[in-house]
Length: 131
Image (spheres, rainbow, N blue to C red):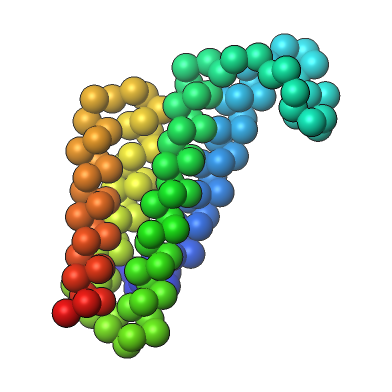
């Protein structure tokens, strides 16, 4: 089982990979002037393709959840309440987020359940910090 600090680092790496994937799918969908558009101010962009839209939304969702995870990790660290329950919650959060990304890209209906599993991990961390 990874420590909370390790999960935090891997979650940051996962967030970066997800953002890169969103950029890749978005730029791949552009025409031959895609590189100039990517380097410019990005006005008048073509609409996203379904996969690029899902990749962007998944990356934004990860970023939103990373904020909560980071706050909980900091609270656990500074309060000295880094318990087995907290570590388990952090690991559940991370591995659910790893599974969430391909499920979101594929448009699978089980995506909300995977997200909920990650949220359970966050609740476990919050409970360890509070009690």
